[in-house]
Length: 54
Image (cartoon, rainbow, N blue to C red):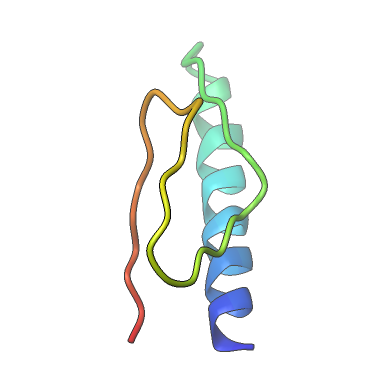
């Protein structure tokens, strides 16, 4: 549950930042939160932020 909360909190922060920057003509693209557990590979992303939780 903590991982889901952290993902949603990050999504809310990113949404608020994107809204603020939109007023300054900045192009921001956010995606729904993704929680990945274990070893995996992701494709189709140009850039991502990794926030590890233990």
